[in-house]
Image 1 (cartoon, rainbow, N blue to C red):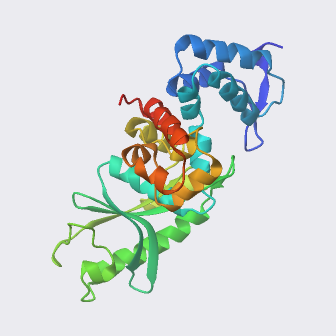
Image 2 (tube, rainbow, N blue to C red; image 1 turned 90 degrees about the horizontal axis):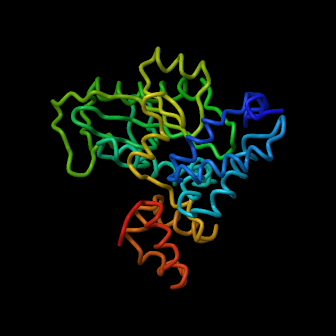
Length: 299
């Protein structure tokens, strides 16, 4: 059976035809050279079997790529690395705050905001020009997970409660409502444009997309929308999560996440924090070298 005829099993359990170009694209985006990508593809295809899972295919590609380039292999694990920002959702919320900042927003993470009826904890608040983005982050650490219509239904109600509180102007200031951001405190007469966002590292169901389009909710998923996905924003802004680093142990990563460090760039710019959390000198040196490769930097 030739590779183009082989049926593979996606994380959702659905069957699909193996696509050589999709595998090639993912390898090249990770920074692999053309000849390395071809070698990896040949090796993977020599082991392909009908019904093989995409997880197993990409794991074998990662192992083959790692023999040539640790740096490219690290970036190739990007989706898995984002899923490892858990198990709690807070590191993911901080990560999404960085994503929004790369898109030009001034952000604040984990804010308590007053609505007309009740108070709400919002994952991320962002401001850009006159827009106030209220962001719901949905973290998933299981491959194949989807964000269904219940999420936009629930968040839409919360969003309307916050927007209505400002619209009715019950004598509260932005600071009293919890909507103030550092360096930005508009006057009471200023009319902001509130915009609801839902950002996830998973996929959206069709109903979730349909409802959000109808309700005016902006969505960003791992591969949605086609022109500006979470993946493309991460890659364009070089926002690599620190969890993709191979030189750090799981314990090291957990401690660094607890210290509020979520991206490779943050760690590179704050090398001393590795010493603070007990990472020995040798591994700090190895990690800094890996960071330079992952970020495309030269010290």
